[in-house]
Amino acid sequence: MLDPVLLDWHGTADLDANLIADLIELRRILEPEAARLAADRATAGDLAAIGAAYERMEAAVGGQGDYVEADAAFHTTVLMASHNVFLIQLKDALLRLLRLGFTTTSRHPNAPASTLPYHASLLHRLEARDGTGAADAVHVLIERNLHHLRGVLGKDARKTASGTGMALTATPNGAKADKHAH
Image (tube, rainbow, N blue to C red):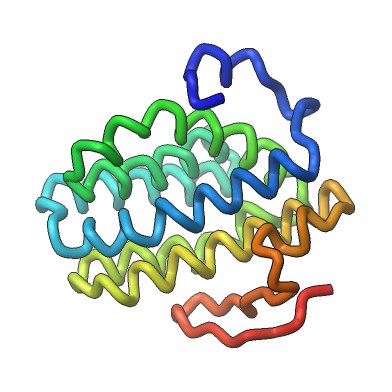
């Protein structure tokens, strides 16, 4: 399933609740640690590339460019900035998975614009070399993504894809609070 060619054959019509749950679980496993590593290891060039991806997201919200591509590039650029050879090898597959998920979530009313402050928070945490804050910011972004997925699909993907029935209340400043999922 991580074969990039196979992933290109899948469309958003193939996204069922279990596949979405698996995607959320994969993101929860990989992205926070990648962000933590990136906060420590990112070069000035890496941070500039992440910032440029964020600017493309802002432009796309304003009607200039493809938001899904910019959002996926933001996340995979953070992954690359981890400078972990094994995480980097997952980039192409993760990029395609993110595109599938973000294509779906971007159908949620105002989803792209509403996530910008959370992406900005992650970028600021990376620039501040705050690994814990960067990991927390990614967790919040993933929870926002799950909220938007539920709004579009009207499904409860495996009880928040964690089996706990708990979700995070997302705030752009990186704070989080446990809240029972609906």
